[in-house]
Image (tube, rainbow, N blue to C red; front, side, top):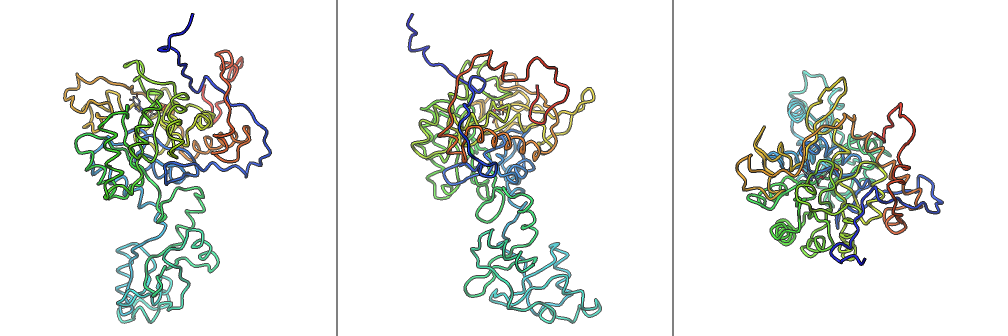
Length: 499
Ligand code: XMP
């Protein structure tokens, strides 16, 4: 019997496919997991933490950026609170202090000591009235002057005067690091061609840079951060307030993105002179047409996933969705020719699925449940039968959409912004808990480690090579059973495998 066209498409997801091993002459150090997040931003680790209120607030966003990924701050909070979260991330690791606290040469050491206490800093560039750098003074310089003389001793009597080791205003992170190292300095003042002070780099940043070599930075050396927005009510005000707070990426975030109001929002953000410099991600879609709508609207990346998430009930409540590997592939058909990166959002349970998502056409993956339960997620530990857990819930769950607990700001993600009574809400997600997993760094290590191994097995040195070389084999449920541990009772849990 011929299958009617209406039923002809077969949808595949992660468990339906395996990647074929390929010839590999790679050393582990050859492998580079850098990938494009948006048209203009890249990440050394292609991981994004989900915009969910049990996953990403400032602490998670900081941890993700330090690991080379990025966090998207959820939007189930007031505009002011979300902007404050952006600010917390942007202040965490100030690469270049663009407006350092300075002191004049005629100030007394007593004044200097007061200033140091006020700002909790131990060294100052000394500048003249034209902001020209004339020296540096630090706590160390004070040590050689008795405290009794501080009221009468001036800064220029004890400072280290020019010539000093300085850098140009547009110095790269690498050059600054090597200058600090070579001259064993704790601070590097930056000056323009006329010798005017334009910034300061401290060795503290250098140390942090060593600790987090893959961290995701903006052009000023601050950690990258994303934030979710909607399309309804005060959404425009939310977007512009987040931009003022320094957000790098806005994520137009709904369960069904192929909707005129959201597409118009993306279009407006990418054309308005006040907002178009910020990267905008559109989502979620699960078809080629849906992705095309965002490409045409000027989106800088497209996020894919309708119903694959661990806490999602969209597919059972509405009967709508596309198995995730097929959805990512379909969306990539619209995005790749336009050079727009694809994000595979939701449904990942094991590190091996990151590589599968990438071969299907994704550039990065967004994770909820895999990161839920880590130390850096919002919420307290729950103790149950001697085991530790943390809460994890869908943004379309009753808990996230109802007024139970506190005001819900994100009902428009499920197109229910105007539903005022909790009884009338139609949830599309559930509330649950996941085992406590320790620090994000350990989880991220296993995820990136797994991706490295995928690339080695496939024989791909880079993410674009993995996309190009990777080939799937469709498998049966018997093969899936064979893939997992079988016929053995597990006696110890592996850090990257839970049964
Ligand atoms: P995972 O599988 O990583 O999925 O836990 C996270 C993604 O799921 C989406 N999400 C939802 N989808 N109902 C849904 O249908 C929900 O309540 C819900 N909450 C989150 C979202 O895309 C997230 O990144």
